[in-house]
Length: 236
Image (cartoon, rainbow, N blue to C red; front, side, top):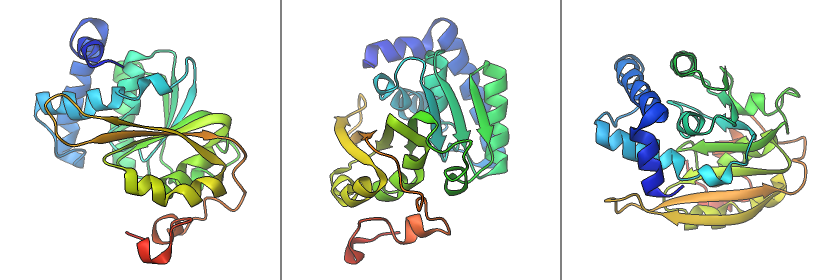
């Protein structure tokens, strides 16, 4: 989505009203649940709301989407505000954060279901495994780990969309994981938010074959022993 178009959606009309209410709810619940360190209105709109909308073009019309590690609801909730055709299942292990997400979904009338589940458990549940056209996540884990969390949710022909910062090293590191999980890298789009120097990257990988039943492995192995990463390069 072009920045000028996104800025208009953020500040005017029906969508602008919803983003305003979302911001108010975020501030209110942030005092209780520590949802974000970014509380300034302009910064929040740019670094959370607009940043979430940068990947909008990679969410097909009418897609059923999953989000892993939803936290405060980025990118899912901004996408749902501007795309009423989308449906989201939000997976978040913190019950307090799930309470916040449910409140926003209810108050804004968004098409979403909130599940207080860990990704590694939900990804093995037949109700969710390979049921989604898109699985996405933002600021959850390094790419190889994130792919193991997300790929099991995506059906063949769907896609994994990861919101990352500078990502060249992570993309190279995740190649083995992608191969094992049935993913094929489509693109890595580099972005800069207006007035920001930090690089952002949208990583999009297509689901080209089913994920083997062994994944996700669970018990924290996705983070402690990321797939396809040489031992000397593994990071927490």
